[in-house]
Image (cartoon, rainbow, N blue to C red; front, side):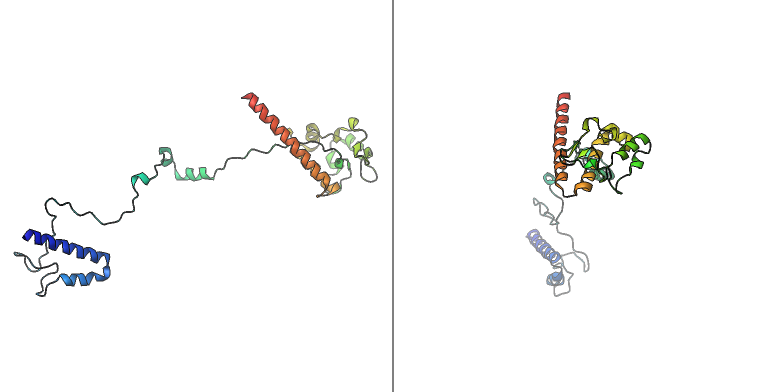
Length: 246
């Protein structure tokens, strides 16, 4: 009976103390309720053989009863919810991981293929104005080509061999070397390498068309459409070659 009463008293004391921990504002009231009127130490009646002021022994669990589980909360997630990182990722330096995140896959360059648009003739306007290089600058190392170029400029600034009614060249098959839009010409007169020819030729045509016909002209829209279709054909041809090589 003494053991049973001691166990009940210990259980009651632990429950009150637990409630006091959960509600800090009730802690003094809980302790006062456990103290006796005779001035005995807090924690209940003094046992036989216990001296005044002596600390009360901690209650021990009854035989065959497991110790009550701890009520402390833990923030640890269950093992099944934890994400297991690969070994090489775990050993990777943080700086390297950040650098790899910054790296973006390079987009393949769009294929551009130049082709002359029928019915344009903007390049036949030889007197192009101050926004373009002068003939003396272009043909500085080719004096014979310079004299030929100047001799082809008409009073209105257009080439004397250009037919304005149908926008064609009267000497197209025998036109001078500098009138040919070819990689060799761009390399010799403008220093443009072969791998940049198509893009530079397209850019030169766009500048000429804007100067002659305007930025919103039908000639510019037609030229861009021609270049787009020609570039698609080039991409398809390159894809077919890659398939054959594999």
